[in-house]
Length: 454
Image 1: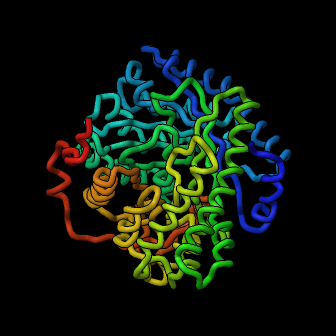
Image 2: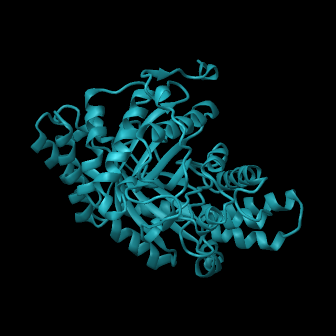
Image 3: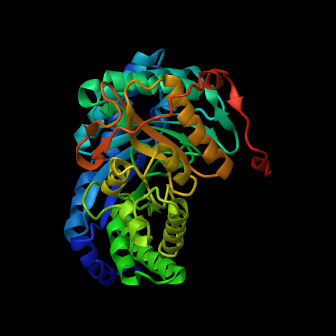
């Protein structure tokens, strides 16, 4: 049982080491909102979200007050909009109308973000999927809180290269459409392979079709806590290092379990999962990169980085699964560039390149995340980077993702400011050799041989 003594034990972590519950995310099924009339569909979507989530922010605030645990974000995820809008939406502009409805509903209930303006196209695109993807640039430009994701591959189905090619163009169009805000729209768009149905983190959250009518998923975060704990085993062997990470991850996850269980009771919504990811912020000391440095690297990107990150990710998972029966989402270590001051420092020092980041994604929780690249990068190059990352996920049977931000009007060496949790980032160089003939082939990269397990 979780008791108040465990919460008291975490006071030091909360006050001095940036421990927080990063998000309470309420997943809402909109399958019962489907209608062939667009106006009726939008009415049903708005009413379902505002009715189901009306107490979400208040419950989060009450839990913060009761336990003294910061809950940074309160969010909503919905059934992928391409499924909900398939009957009513005849073109991209109709999906933009749905995005506006989602934004209005999110504002009404007071959440930070609403995720699920999404399509699942790992084996092929319906016309509705294509229309939603084409709607993304406008949808993300005219809304404040809407986040979008597209799953273009899986270990079971392979990679839909038609969708990958299209998304390279869509990402550039999103960057252009939001260039007055340093192409911020791209920070709200994630391309996935093996996307989980229960991820509480944005921008990739959506409510999977196998989920119930509503569910509470919680994401905890504590890289600062892990960094502080590792200071006590400086110079010790790997056994002591691993045990320290596991024990710390256990304590962090117990906090998330407490919040998830209490939120579930107060909202009368089933508890889904705790995502125990180490998600950094721009705050000093709240950094996965600082953990890697504490493990023994001068900077992330130095030789040994991939091994150190693999160790960290594995021990976090081992500690977390002992603390909750329902661990899910992404769970592990995130390595976003703009959201982690240590990663920014490593890029500026010349230690960390896009290629090394790609290698690191083989062993971490997600992928190439919040990376700013030159605004004149070709769409085919972006598609090639996406294809590389999707292949890592497909072959390794893990979730991988890409959140690239081609910043219009800026080049290598420039700095782009996103603000808040999104932080700031140096523009990173991209390999300029062409892959256009490859990404333009069309069709699907087949699933790997080890996908046949039936």
